Length: 219
Image (cartoon, rainbow, N blue to C red; front, top):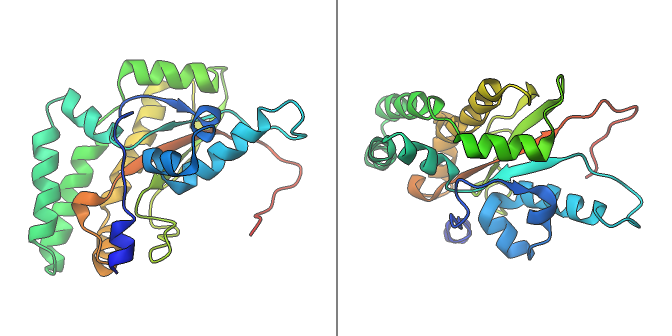
């Protein structure tokens, strides 16, 4: 599906930074999507609207680690060459399920060891608050999901009830979401849609969780 592949954009100019949702939501839609994907952009737009005193509703604190942040974390520990080699290997073994599974395993093991930098964690803490007991949802927001020809619903991981006051726990959850970009299901889905593995990117959406009186999904 050439239209799907053409839609894969990833602006990495803010890689390794933390974008508060209200700030991301104040950007033009196309720019926001290019930085962090449509899922994060939709949440960011709500946060931006809620910042208006006359909005009539509030949005919980949240922030995004934009596209390129995983690669920046790899470069910080000298793992970027290995990461790039394995991603390229995914293309070369395409069509061989056993070899693809092996490369996916190696990729996920590598990515799970990565962590956002200390400055990133400090920025997240400043945005989300560091009160003891505050829980956050760590969500995927990829450029290869929520597209006309590739919904990818449920394909990538989200980690719930993450203790935002513990940098080790929050950092591990971020890495787990990054790693979900390379499950065999995700790789096979992109291959079937004609999307190259090199073009796939993952941003991470972190939102404070609420304990609602009523909850629902609006379609």
